[in-house]
Structures are given as structure tokens and as C-alpha cells.
Image 1 (cartoon, protein in one colour):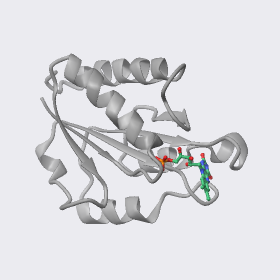
Image 2 (cartoon, rainbow, N blue to C red):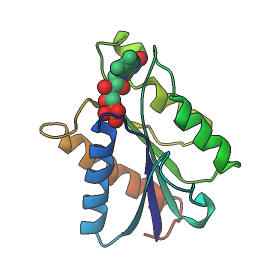
Image 3 (cartoon, rainbow, N blue to C red):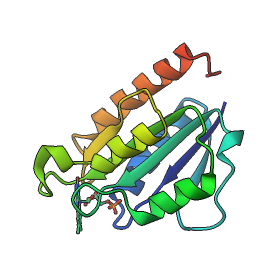
Length: 147
Ligand SMILES: Cc1cc2nc3c(=O)[nH]c(=O)nc-3n(C[C@H](O)[C@H](O)[C@H](O)COP(=O)(O)O)c2cc1C
């Protein structure tokens, strides 16, 4: 099962979620590639069975430009994209909290709800990551992706 986690992170919160996902997937014997968006060549996502995409939210619920550029470089929309992200409810309240996760999930026609984490996932929110990942793997299995 070829899996990649691509993430965009300025101050490290989204990267922490990416790292947690990686750790948990590796514990389940998944072989994981990581790509920090903006660092090095964009990978060919079409080689992967399972794709995790992570982003923070910016500027009143916007998707960061680097994430839009990444999507343009990827070109077509790969299947089996699962979206996670971090945000802060102080910016615009619930409506705009992690809004980039909603937008990206819609764009990639991901039919599984995105994971939204407030700032750093360390501590009590770690269980949200674990629970979400479990749901993703069950969902992917249901779609007959090899797990
Ligand atoms: C100028 C600015 C605008 C932001 N706007 C939003 C927003 O509209 N919605 C949201 O959920 N979070 C917003 N945030 C919070 C960040 O998304 C949050 O801190 C996130 O965890 C940063 O991710 P990173 O550490 O991976 O870079 C904003 C942060 C800054 C500095």
C-alpha cells in the first residue's frame, strides 16, 4: 500500500499532525513517503494508493497560495485523497476555522470528512488524529484499496 503525506506548514502545527499520522501508520506497517510542500520536486501523486494532504488556513478562511500552486503542479485530481489541517478558532469563529480543509476536500472530491485540529495536535487532540486515521483506513478499505 503506497502512501504519501504531503503537507504545508509555516509554524509547525500542520507538520506535527503529519508526523503523528506518519508514526501511527508506520506502527501499522505502512511504508510512508513525506513531502513538505515547497521543498523539492512535487512527487507524482498518481503512484500512490493513499494520499494525505495537510494544510493550515490563512487570511479569513483561505487556502494558502503554496497549496494552490501545489494543486496546479499535481495537475489532475488523484483519487483517494484525505485532507487534514490545523487552524485557530480565534480567526473568524467556527465558519472559517480550518476552512482550507473544507475547500481542499471539496476540490479533491474527498468523500470523507477532513480532520481539523486547533493549533498543535499534541496533548488531548492526539486522540482526534488517531480516531480520524482509523476512520480513513476503514473508509479506504471499503473502497477496495489494498490495506
Ligand atoms: C494571519 C493569520 C490568519 C489566519 N487565519 C485563519 C483562519 O481564517 N482560519 C483558521 O482556522 N486559522 C487561521 N489562522 C491560524 C493558523 O491556520 C494556525 O495557526 C495553524 O495552526 C498554522 O499552521 P502551521 O503551524 O502548520 O503553519 C491564521 C493565522 C494567521 C497568522
